[in-house]
Image (cartoon, rainbow, N blue to C red; front, side, top):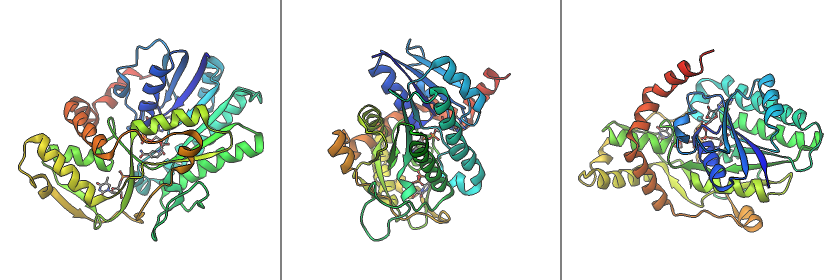
Length: 350
Ligand code: NAD
Ligand code: TYD
């Protein structure tokens, strides 16, 4: 079936994997990637699909109501997969308003544009809001986040994502907008901006720079390979039930310090260093303010109801990720030097 799908945030980490997957798996779809190209958006992530006949890039901010109206009028998408967001907890601590603007105001502006663009004719339409497990807060006494866990966001990032989730559901209730929401655990994989734990550690190990572990390194995250998240998004978009929420996770909990040691061991081997050499770079630094202790997802609903589960083990995924970073030094150089941003400024100058 021919169909146009609007993906927001498609130049970012997860979005670029979702764009690549849909462009290549569904040649009958037209995929519109809408992205404002902030510091986290990088069209180099999509070099391999940028000339595909079913792919179009539109530079637009999700807070720009007029711009969105034009996109809906011109491309007439039947589905929206909404990933555009400010996504880094540490940045949300220094600048919470930026998170309110993009994650809350931007999502509401996009919801308005979808409703208005679809003019109430919701048959065959779907708004898919992609969110995080961080909206559930921090686990202290065991247990897992289920779809019924009460929201209890603890950082400006998770508070802004929680608000955006509420707006998506409120639109479903108030205007009968057909929507689905998913809440996923921490992702890792290729094209991950090196301000987040795993790519930052890989980059610093490679450059013999210190490895900043927050607090005692005892915080626990549940890691999922980004391509498995992209396959879960594909599954929820096509098979999910309107009005439902699906938790997505890897059943793969790691204390930060254990994960950093594992990365050091893998990198020692890959770089031909003596065992234990990279681990000497570990440095305990001041903890993140309000640092959530543990996230862990119960992903049994999506497995049971939609038949999705992760495809590879963590060891396999991590090895592929390290190999990708070592083989793509130019990508790393460009994002760390900001060269791609200067290119956009020149290329998209009005
Ligand atoms: P990212 O920061 O790598 O990418 C975000 C993308 O959104 C970038 O391309 C950026 O240019 C774009 N963007 C930002 N503000 C915009 C705006 N105002 N208008 C249009 N585009 C804008 O983020 P990510 O890690 O790929 O996360 C994508 C989504 O998945 C987010 O909604 C995030 O909350 C969610 N999520 C992320 C994780 C994770 O581990 N990274 C886990 C669960 C859920
Ligand atoms: P991060 O990748 O920022 O994801 P999130 O905060 O959304 O889970 O951080 C993952 C974990 O790693 C988190 O517990 C904070 C910790 N961390 C460090 O210890 N050092 C670092 O330099 C970074 C970026 C994160």
